[in-house]
Length: 170
Image (tube, rainbow, N blue to C red; front, side, top):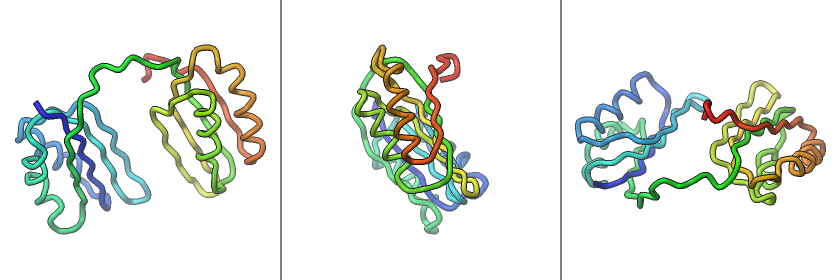
């Protein structure tokens, strides 16, 4: 069984998810992991599925991209199997006036402490910029990390919170 990474990007319209999911189901591809979102009028999805060869999936998705409205890519990936969590799950939230470099600076603090960003989303609402990140942190670093996050946030003129993630919600 092949494991595939599929991305679909294009101007948002009703039916993209259904169209892609129907193509995959007809091919016998099992959708295992996915993330899908609308970003300023554009739709983006990334899927991992198991099923037929990548060339077969590319050919089946081609009609959806034929009019130039969507871009679909398919590539074979090597299954990692079950990967145990490398640390403790936390959620970092950042909000404040929009400015360049917020994501870069805040995630650098996490990485320098041995953290790994596992999911991140941002939103710009007027002049308010919001970052929400799920992270894995090494055991015991959160207490010292929060001070570094607060210092970096103050330099950027934003607010930051770091809290343990509720495992039932992830």
